[in-house]
Image (spheres, rainbow, N blue to C red):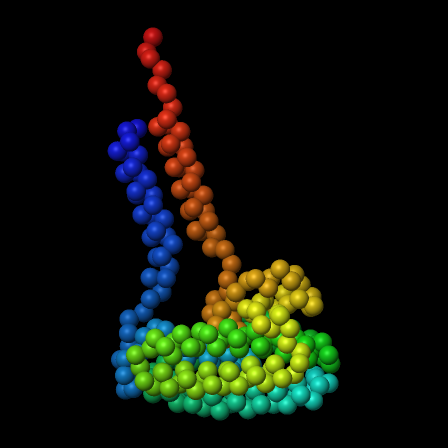
Length: 251
């Protein structure tokens, strides 16, 4: 194989790799949508959907605190979280209705795992998990909602994102006021059972689960991409070995 041919093959492989690593995101992209309140992007719609999913799990576990907690402050915080999410839901439903955005009726699997986790606890164990689980979710959500607030071109979305972040900041402060938030609560949210001090592998604390407590898809390696990387490496290695292999003179 000549050097020119090798470079051509290598270029094709690198192009395939680039397409493989970016194709999924491109395929999932949606065109902007016109609404009575102005044009909205896929990110704008995603915000509305994910805030709804956050309310679907954070409100109920706030109510769970009224019967599972032994800590008066935790019960107060849970009651306020549930009340704030009911109000936020009302504003969200009206905005989504005007914009024609369908909102989910159920939590995602990660959030359901957190609900089940907290419903299996009582007393001090519940209090600790409640404070740290919700503080972690709110912390990640705060940054992600702020990003939409900064980048959106739609004023209604911008106003909603601002109101949402005001509530999220309020909730973070309230959760911290319990005195139960540890480093786990200041980190990214992790799958159920993966929080230090609870059942499961603490090493999961490094895994991201997405916006507002799993508002987006869970983290983890993309096996297809790993396989593609390995395949490219093998092909390039074999090709290089063939290029540098000395030719034996004919007898």
